[in-house]
Image 1 (cartoon, rainbow, N blue to C red):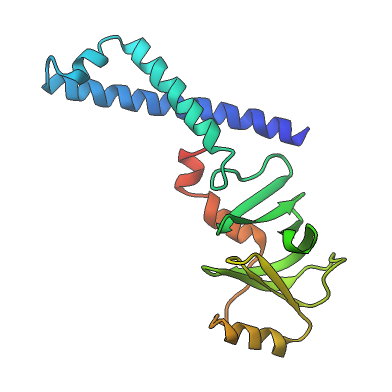
Image 2 (tube, rainbow, N blue to C red; image 1 turned 90 degrees about the horizontal axis):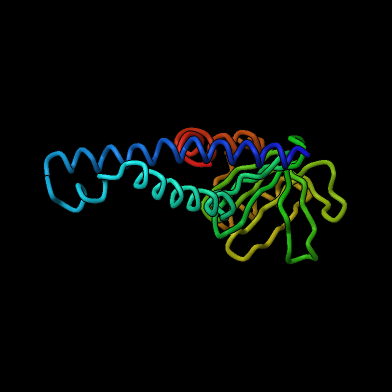
Length: 191
């Protein structure tokens, strides 16, 4: 049910964005047409309602499709996700449990507590609810979609050294990275 409400909210947000974008395009065309009488901009923007509706439909379709792409999908309802590169993602369910889906080991999920995202790696502390992974630390190689789990700090830091990754970083929770990615211009300008 939460997903349905969120989907309806997203459709309303897209409709508002479409209205704004189509109006801005119409005003831009009218402004250009004012200084270039008889130009293509002038001819196209003469029938304002038709021009606005056609642009609105095109923008609506574009934003709706974008909402389901890898870089546009942020989850519906009680699920959330962050795209992290190499077409990989970190997901969260119910606002409490964040995880990485490890499809290489039989579609298991690694519960994570806090993390750090670098260009090709995600690493940090594992969560408490792991059935198939035993260890306190994890390293997720995004290039080859491989998750490694480590029992000791020494083993974890040795692996970070092997990949020339920073050791003294501050691990953050899922919400920190979610807000970093989805707030700002993405929140206001995209569905």
